[in-house]
Each structure stands twice: as C-alpha cells, then as structure tokens.
Image 1 (cartoon, rainbow, N blue to C red):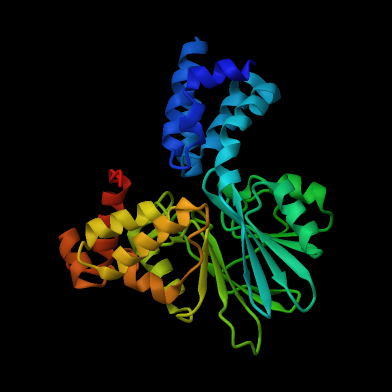
Image 2 (cartoon, helix red, strand yellow; image 1 turned 90 degrees about the vertical axis):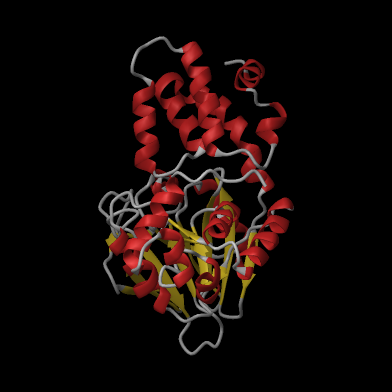
Length: 359
C-alpha cells in the first residue's frame, strides 16, 4: 500500500494533522476511499454495523476494522499512520496525591486510559487499556507493579486491549461487569469491593450505555484527599453516554442516584475527551448558565495546548452538565417536560442529532 497515495485519496495532509478533525470525518473519508477501491457489494455494511455496536465513531477503530475486512495487517499498519498524530498531540497528565496517583494516558483519537497507582505499595491498576503497549511503557516509567485491569464496559475502544495486555503482563486480574469483556477473570456487580494495594475499590453498576457498565469508585481509608471515580461512558465532563442498551430511567438512576450521591469533591475520570462539544450542547440547553460559559472557555484553552480537560468533580457536574441538571426548571423548560426522567430522555434524543457549532 502506497501511503502517499492513500494520503492523497483520503485528503489527509493538513486536515489529518489538525487537532479538530472528528471520527465522523475520518470515517467519511475512509468510506469514500474504500468505495472507490472495493467493488464487492455489501462490504461497507458490516463496518457501519460495527460503528453502532462500538457506540462511537473512533477513527482508529474504523480504520482498523477496514484493514481487517479488506487488507489485513499491511493495510492496518498504513492506516495507523493516519490516526497517530491525534493522540500524539494530546498530552498525558499526572494527578498526584499523597495517597494515590492517576496518570491520564490518551489513546486512539479521543479515549483515555488511566494508570492508578497506590503510593504506599507501588501497586497499580489500569482502566480500559485499549493500547496495551502504552500502558506497559507507563508502568515501567513509574516503576510500579501492574496487578489489575478495571474494565468499564465491553465496547472495543475500552476492552479491546485486554487480551493483548494479559499476554504482556502475567497474572493480571481483569475486572468487569459483563461477560462480553475480553480476558475477564473477575465478574463484578453493584457494590462489589476489592483492593488495589491499600486502595479500596467499590464497583458501581450503572447500566444504560451498555447493560453491564461498571464505574469504579476509589478511596484511601482515613485519607482526607479527594476520592476518584472512573466513569467510562456513563458520565462525561458535561455529558453522558448514549443509551445503547438502556433507558432514560436507568441513566437517571446512574447519574443522579448512584454517581450523584458520591462525595462532591470526588474527581471524575471519564472515558473520552468530549468536553468542548458537550459544553456547546449544554450552552444550547442553558444559554444563561455562567458556569457553562466559564467551563467552555477554560476547556478551549486547555484543548488548544493539548492538555486534558479531565478530571472534573461531582460538584462541578451539577453546575454545568445538563444530564445531571434534569431536575432544574431551566433544563426541563428547554426540554418541554415537567419531570426529570422525561427530561433526561428528551435532551439525550436532542443531543443525538445536535449539530455542534463550529465555534
């Protein structure tokens, strides 16, 4: 495969190096190029189906699927070069406390993996390790012992690296709430608890995006520092996941009754860098909300220099996240509803077709 020719066909060039391209744009270019090269009927349909199943338009995921369907490893290697720049631009970040550290590891086009380190024992867990080698490199850099994989849900862009990681690191315990999670060794349910070193992990069952979605709430006993919650695709900064396998009532329960009852200072580590687009929708719902305006300006400044907009806190989410604010009169008025659950369903449906403003 001639990469230069492919770049030209896909219109890569500067557009592919731009930070602001989207998975949808990449898929569109990939699809158009494939249609020009592949003449067999029906081959694009399986890829479109996979997009829906994965729950997001991941550039690398789509290109990888294209490679597996049409060209094998050689095509995958060529296509990988086209998506590498995005995650390379996005910087990793370390949130350090005296009791634990969390390193944010950018993956694919907009995913995050998280390396959770117990400072007392130097034991570590990784959340959703879709790019295993990057995880192994981070483990070596910190000089810690990786023992645990925390999988939020079964979608490829979260659980797709499990099988390879357990081959790279022996003896890993792989936690998840769904039998569809790859390399699963420990199936958990709501309020299951376990330890990562001296850190206490509590599993929170939050079905809706997927029927087996788990969030992981991490605390250090007797610590005065903020706890952490890893929310996968249930709660994003200023947003929530699509309702692929659940209902508005389930998402209300997950966000308000489960995550919303965590300590206000809890740091929220979500699965994707969707913050700017989420805040643009939030501004559409509540145009007079000053918290949204401030957070959006802050997020744009962070994104422009490649820095993550994560973590937020539970307390913050109640000020600017429309899906956490479905009990507020302003959000219900926008939705044309008079109860929180109907409002949840209404604004999720609206966001599914929302055209994000260019600026």
